[in-house]
Length: 255
Image 1: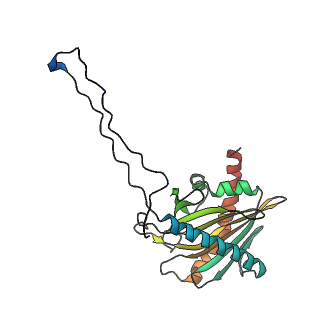
Image 2: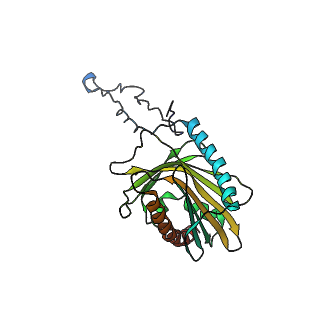
Image 3: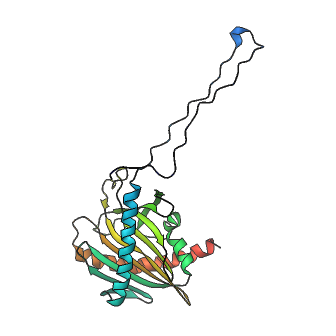
């Protein structure tokens, strides 16, 4: 991705430590020379173009805020629902857009912390095989790698995304968008999905929070789009139920 720069965690220089002097009270043949063991090289760190990723994230923030306003004024078609859970979706020129809305009995700050805990997510998300923090682009943007399990006839997918929490007047907005780094390609047998715009819009309510998850994606591969939309809508209702059960455990752990 153009000119690259290393992670914000700079590499430390290793200096060979030497003894300041030799013993003088030993016969010449017994003089001992010491030297420290050479330091092992640090593992290579993924590289990325900070300015390019910041540009992509800033554009995603603008687009997501516009999407929130647009879908509130003109609701998307409803694809699936359960009590307190609504899944909307529509085809787009780039892929398809899903909007999931549900009630959560926890405040926005707890919801945000829960969604950003990668290691804990593996304990409750049934679709996820791997989720790890890759690095920090700057003080506000972080990189996350996610690999999803194969679902029925759909091969495993993965996503490398940049995320940022954005200031808004009411509630919290946490955005995500796909980026590509040469050192982190899709694994063998895994299809790299692309997230054009995504994020959580979390509003405070008297009972806790109203959570809205936006995802406009291209899943890649040759699966018909209509089938993917249908499967995603059905999968998301169960995923939201797992989300609410997971955050209940997280809130107890975090006390």
